[in-house]
Structures are given as structure tokens and as C-alpha cells.
Image (cartoon, rainbow, N blue to C red; front, side, top):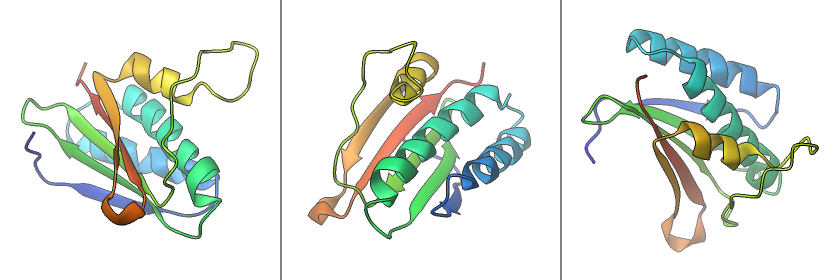
Length: 131
């Protein structure tokens, strides 16, 4: 799948940085004439997962990349140095955690995980339609 110009943000090792992530996503989505609610929701979940599960165990960067697919959807990916692959949990309505990928699964056209070569981390991606 080919992608147009890419926008990238290095996320600080701090959960407070998630607000900066949302500002970045709003800015990029606005430049592309796209509603930002779903992209902000999905970015929040993917970045929070990376910060909580991967970055905390390492001192590596979390990188958010946004680009457009050939059919004008939003391609979002979050790269981190963690090698443990996340998995979709059954949604527990009483729990305060564990619903991130469930939310991503509900709002993204598709999503997935790709391990990086030489065990240097992974990329979690999601494709979000314009409407």
C-alpha cells in the first residue's frame, strides 16, 4: 500500500505526552480536511500502550507516524522498542485498562502488528477511514 507524505512525532517517555500526541493528530487531520475524533482516539490508545508496555521497560523512543493511503484513508503507526506483541483482550467494562486494542479494533478499518528485524521492536498500525 503506497503512502503519501509522512508526518512523524517522537513521543516523550511520559504519559502526559499523550495530550501532545492528540494536538499533533488534530493538526495533521485538520490539514487533510479529516475529522479528528477517531484518529485522536486511536492514537491515544496506541501511544499509551507503547508508553506503558514497551517504553517503560526500555529507554527507547516511541514514534508516531501519520500518512495517507492511496484511497485517502489515514495510515497511523506507532513504533517502539518492545518485542512483546500486544494482543486484543476481551473487553471488561469494569476494568480501567485492557480495552485499548478493542477500541482500535472497533474504529479502525484494519490494524496489525509487525515485528522489526533483529528484535529491535515493533510497529502497531491502524488504517482509519475519512468518515
